[in-house]
Image 1 (tube, one colour):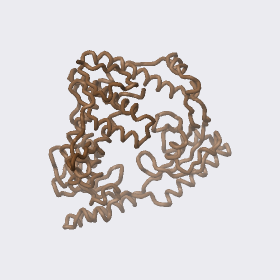
Image 2 (cartoon, rainbow, N blue to C red):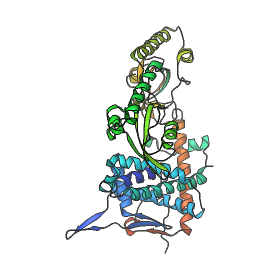
Image 3 (cartoon, rainbow, N blue to C red):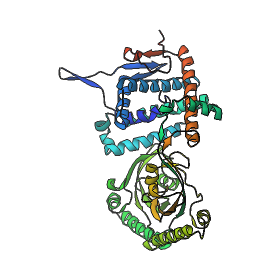
Image 4 (cartoon, one colour):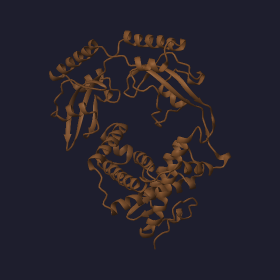
Length: 453
């Protein structure tokens, strides 16, 4: 069975954004044909909930058996509802401020997608306030269910012997093929923006600010000069946001403004901004900004590339080791690169190429060092690196020697899922459960959802 716990929340949130009312045509009249397919405690699951989630899954990954897929989605939802039911029984407390922060994030995305608050009902069939309430309920329930799930599974462990037993339970023919993986080291140089360039950007922003204070339109200047691709076309407008959504420097300046007031220059990790407060509504504000980003000059970029290419030549000749060169020259603290998607030291080809386009890792030999390449780091800044292939793990069937970490995580998740299933089977004995006839014959339920009469 697929994982039945909280991963469904991502599908449900996507489903709300794309939700459409389920209707039929009857003599020219539109009639809602939605119905309840399950009840867990006081929590209901509608036919449209399952269908909209099914559409999202089908679009993203395809399905092999529609009935089984719908059954699995329904069971995921029922498990979440049972966790929420337990959380309400136990009076689990969740942070309303944190929930509201997440709600504002999704609302801002919806408003952006719709092209404005006034278009929300036309695009999503919900007003701003209705969408807010839906998001709030979903995210609150997620926090509650996460709390209960953590309480149930925090002490679940698996020993090396259990990992080996888990691996041995698979037939050799059913073991997955692990694609070729790579472990790499990196020496990185991050060119520094010159103070002259920083001064140039400050001067340009100050000129724009003076023009706005004298009466020019902020929105028009934002469209002309702002380097924020997400807001420039909308006159720099960001939409309503709460505290905790923006970076701290930007947020402090924005929340200190009065409506119509323009801030002094604010520096953040993205660059330099001027901000104008549009409207304050409770704990949320709507603001617009102009962002200008200082650029590393071409001479400093060329210097970084030449330095790294020369260093690569010295390493290839054996004049200095890769490790010593990294300690002496690298802007990064770590030599070995960790995969941001998994936290491990291993990359598949696709993930590596996304991070370091142009390296050509497939053609490299172990120990080989690349030429200098430019790429964008986690802070969205262009940096230069040379890469050493330290280890290549060829494509192979999964085994305990090469893939212990991967197998351990699978064994641990299986143990946690079993814990949740066992708990569910106990909870349903004292919880009202209803399943419609459409789903009573699901062949792949892991929990005994025997309806309470």
